[in-house]
Length: 177
Image 1 (spheres, rainbow, N blue to C red):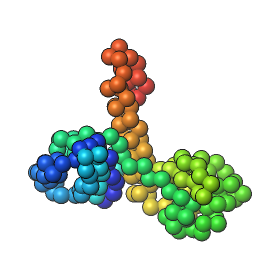
Image 2 (image 1 turned 30 degrees about the horizontal axis):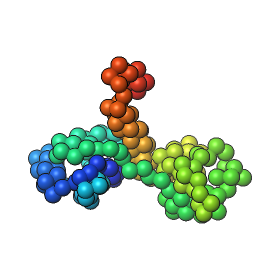
Image 3 (image 1 turned 60 degrees about the vertical axis):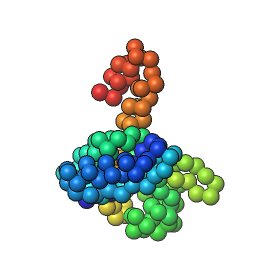
């Protein structure tokens, strides 16, 4: 089972929610919940699939078939404390990895730096933990995080292509093909 959230553009209406229910019921059964308003929202999925990429892509297709526009996949950014909890280690151990005082070095850079505590990409951290053989990594969650990061980037490119002049679109598309 793969758990992830899709970000959708607003407005999210009752008609969208009903349409998604119809799409899901026809395809595989209800495996999503919607939160949204005139500004946009989230569609939270728990989807069965052969792998995380198939789970996320099929969810995007279902959501867009219901008339919503998927703008991203929720970034799974984690604090030192959340990394410790997920990896089943102490926060002190994680801080040592972050500073390079222990472990193999090369801990991922924070995505958001803040004096009170930085936020890291769980996709990058879980891959680093697995490669470093440190902590306990939920491999399904790590696979989902990596797929969400990649597909989120693809959605950003898709959105950006729409804003480019027609003659420039193939140039950017070649980078991701």
